[in-house]
Image 1: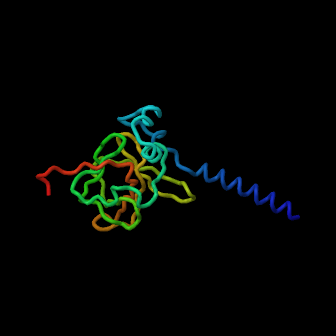
Image 2: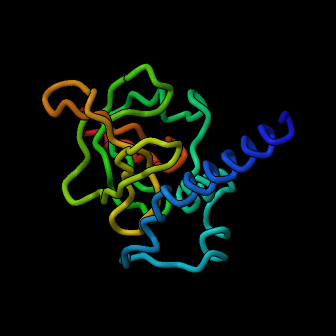
Length: 166
């Protein structure tokens, strides 16, 4: 009887694992065509290993590990893959999550896809020009939008504003 329970539990575990793989969303790159398209080898040559894992493989950084988390200067946060401007520093805030957070992207900067990893449904955001995975958007942000764009800092590059902007 004991062996039967172990067998049934093992089979149930395998089915659960298969279900999670099936529910997982497909990467944005597979679903859409983008203005900037490169081979896997070209992306690997251009990006750091951490940027590649995040932007191309939908990875995430450890909370608190991005230097951009503490970036307070005026400027623009752009995609590390194609340099498309994504967020203004005017919309950045400290959400306490350990990732750079913004309450609004720039116009025509992001695409969205449904992400079903980890047994939950979330809204993934990606660069609309190269399809690079950036993070997720949640509806627990500050006014005026009520949104929290929780973005992997290593998926971004920061361009400080010129000296005349203060």
